[in-house]
Image (cartoon, rainbow, N blue to C red; front, side, top):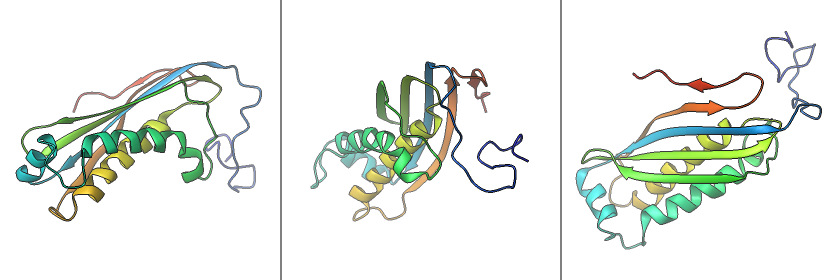
Length: 160
């Protein structure tokens, strides 16, 4: 069982994978998600007309901070010294924001969870800041688009 699922020991109990002897390599991950909302909510965000301030700036910072704290949120993730984190939020049509996160490091484990966490927390921050005007917002399509480095090699999601 431990050969199939690296987070389980030989008896099927959860464990943190030992990466002590793994080589440090350059690794990166790109994740994406969307937050769908009423067109008027998106217009308010883009016009910086929200009474709480610059929603996009706060969401970017929240996403970066979340990537750095992923190991505190996901029980079996390793604490990582991220070399770089970028979070972008861009309009996607007239009723959504696309959220992208790129994480990079030189280390012995990947950064997929950090990129996915950054996207999710950035979208949750938009929801939190805008829920008073639009409780029907939907966070959707959070996924890993690509990753590079490490023993498992590169991954690129096939276009849908």
